[in-house]
Image (cartoon, rainbow, N blue to C red; front, side, top):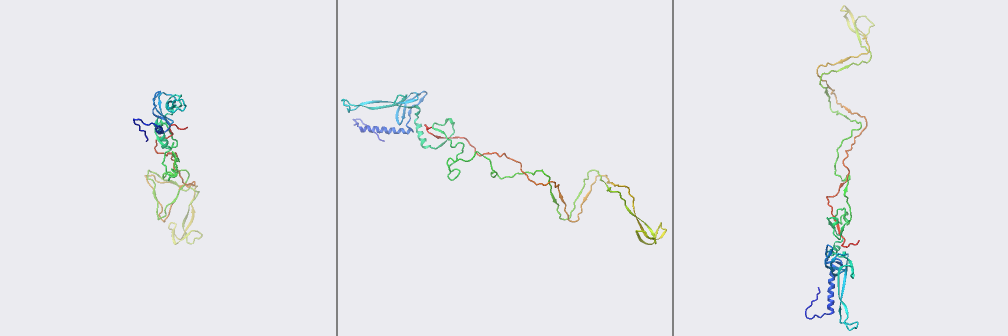
Length: 372
């Protein structure tokens, strides 16, 4: 950095020296850009109740002392000039010319100076630096924030671009994540049949409708079926014969006939000399039969009853002769088939498709004096 070295003993002051000093002053003024703007508080100017302390400010890139006092809405620039007498006499009055040499400027509350601006424009130096840094390095950067909405720092605001979404990392090889700002997914989802785990349901058929089942026993080999009635308790069996119509029974009367008797039917030769009529008639030769009928009296029947003495059983057995089979059939009333539907389960409701979450905010830097 350039510097001016002065020593005692009569330094030769010249225009070059003054130009050097002005150049150094200009270089120092360029440092005011570090504040991030051309108007800010460099030091002091601290609000204490209703008053503000003295300090130093930068206004439009110019460093100015600030005279504090009771807070007012406006700050004004007070400028004073001090003249010096030059050796030149351009006006010809025999005296050196008077020209402005020392111009002093300061800032204070009020409105009567050469320039006036709002006190609210003055921000601390650190805010100016932060404004410049964040404006430069945090453009389009979103930062997480977990404080109260009303406590978001000055110069920052809520970022709406990710509201209600989980962030994912940009991946140019994945078609779902290959574009910044692309959205997808859902908070809840209802599974389709293809997405459900493999499973089965048990159930039974309805009892509605007449139906029958047919079948046949095996015909292999001779066989028999046996069984017996229950032997519980004394009992008897009763019944009756058929009572159908009046009827009679035929029979044959037989007697011996003489040797020469003719015209009698039903004869059977028994030889000569057979005894008959109480063994007094020995010239009989034939046994003669006469067909006859019993008499009959009206319709009738015969009742029978077994003995009821003591508990007893009756055994039965079918004939075992030859191969045979037995066919069976249940009631065949009504054509039918069997179908069933399992009991309906489930409410078909959507399930929460999100992992465990906690809400935070994202904020972005918009500057200390955002343009509306």
